[in-house]
Length: 274
Image (cartoon, rainbow, N blue to C red):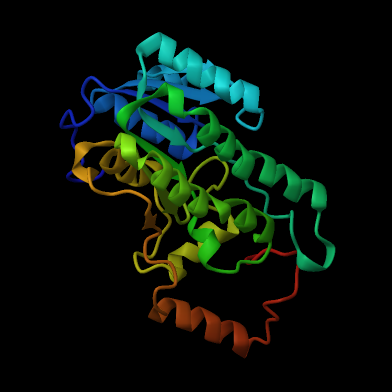
């Protein structure tokens, strides 16, 4: 757990549902919420014992199916009461989906079905199951802010989430319900291990010189779920370690070395790295 992130009971007595809650960022968020006193339901297509280890309640559902998403919200509210916090985090990635010259349309459609429509299904179904004053947090992506080889499909599936959040925040503000997005940068998960090209590039392309661990990102969700962010809605928090906010010396040396070696950065299989 990062320094200064010791549990302080900020979510004591609250109920939360986290989609994509059995691994990666979702699991880290579920675990942190439990440590802050929340009763957490972790929703995922597949059970993982880590959910039990985190102290959350597992629920199986596919967020890309609207009826399953609605039923999950209903079941979670019946089990623990109307939700104080809803985290729409479930998502997938595919780096091979979208080289411009031969886009894999089926792969992109699947990204949109899960990453875009899955969130829309949650937003459309959630109002009856939320407490007044609830917090809704959507996992977007810093990848929408920069072009990265092979990421077009993933980025386009995440980009609409900001507009969804703003509209939902406006619609539900009269009930005191806040809706925000979190845009993580490169995070080390099973979906993106340390030897992944993007994770390797994060060592030179971020101000902090590394990718993030899931628990470092989870703290942002705790802030948005708690009263600490009572006047924060319709906005985005970017947690990307300063990705390309400037050109670090290490990044500059790497780029210059590539140019000196005559490397064509546009060539290859749609990935950066070797």
